[in-house]
Length: 193
Image 1 (cartoon, rainbow, N blue to C red):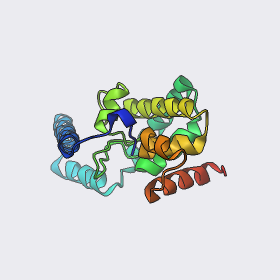
Image 2 (cartoon, helix red, strand yellow; image 1 turned 30 degrees about the horizontal axis):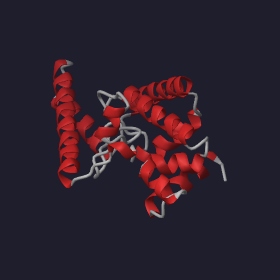
Image 3 (cartoon, helix red, strand yellow; image 1 turned 45 degrees about the vertical axis):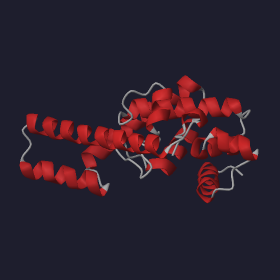
């Protein structure tokens, strides 16, 4: 999940508030989706099937193709806007969320690029469940971190996962198993040593 060192939570209360905000946003999104489905006149069975597909992470074939095409467009726009590799963006998204737009981690990170609420706010993302905004925010963060670490991919990825403060503290990839695995998996996915 993505962190920004100045946006990390210093108290348990701040962290719990961020998690509560993420859960509240997810509940509001689910209610809006249900209302939209009812307006479209979907049968109860169709709504149930869509909910099961969403819950299981198994989208319908029609939504998968459309969603995939939209995500590809968003990844390319973000890569062009922030002058970073579209392959890097997609590798981070694959590792962070498996390309799921409405996923929330146990720590409260939201969406395709798994942005923490404070990080999303810092990046100007007003709706972290909106795939386009989320991907743009993740791209902006990766671009900022890449500039901060002079293009060093390992440090950029480590800071995306653990925060720039942790990378600065250790001067290298922090000794956190999650972060070390995150960096290794993405670099392997990109075919980079």
